[in-house]
Length: 64
Image (cartoon, rainbow, N blue to C red):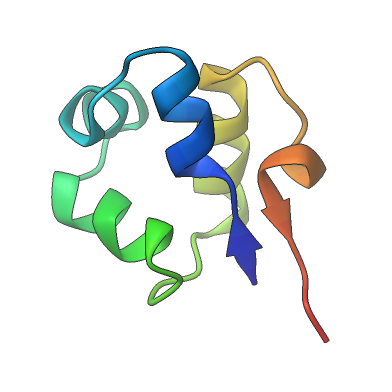
């Protein structure tokens, strides 16, 4: 699974720490998700998408 979190953060001048606080996780969790080393739970994916007012599908892409 890949994601565009870094792109969406950059478009909003948002730090990893700010995003982490908004969704209730640590900055290290956001780092791991951005590096595709951790796949977030469905609940966390929806929270992240909600922060950016986007759909989960626009933020996260499943690769086969």
